[in-house]
Image 1 (spheres, rainbow, N blue to C red):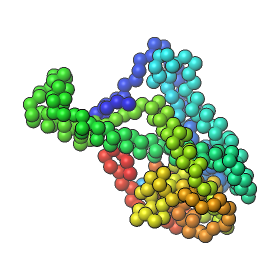
Image 2: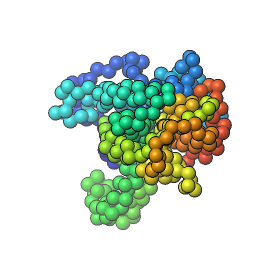
Image 3: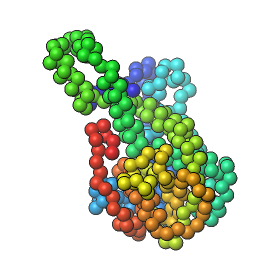
Image 4: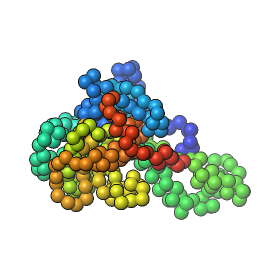
Length: 330
């Protein structure tokens, strides 16, 4: 991860042999919400209604295979690895690992949706892993990760970057070093002219590592509850899972670890809720719980909110206007 001025091209590590790339149209899409989850909100033609988070009046139909996906999203380019790590490297290894996790989880979810709730240790572990990955594998989490990294770097730099160090940096680059120049450069650094730009490899590895090593145990320690609804009330979004806290003045402001509930909608009628405390349950609940889940998922969306073409679940909730700071965080 490097500190670059905004707009500066990210340098690539040199590679002794050119790496052939297929045509972009041939590169498979990487889904950050599994297709088996998205299909729970699609019609018989596998179509979803996608609504733009930043403009709820803008929507269109999209196929499940195109929703919540980007090309090369989990690809780790060989040229970004150190030379000794390149031999035998498969750039698609992360996508394959995620597909294995999804394959096992999809069977569990089919069982839960069908009415079975065998809260065995193995099933709880797989569900905890799935939820943890959904919380960390999306573009939204990557953006938040970069934002937090920049805030942390800024706090560190404010302690470390003395005037003497700034003056030396300017001198090393042949720039003027008067007190005014030092003050100007300090302002340039700390008011957004520079930011950390992680490599693709760093983002893929660190965000998923956080999900597996940090969030998965936290999700396993929570109480699983299956929420069922007698009518199709649920929606999802391009994050797949989201936290919610009912007693906060701003219900979406709490972090994942402290959130009252983590929602993972499974289809239009069923959601998995991981709560803090209590006992496992599986029952039909009031529609207000659908509103809570829908709010959490829709508000956390990076770009798109998804629902069945015939549903109007989004109309039941009141989403706040999106706001971003200069680091790209909400």
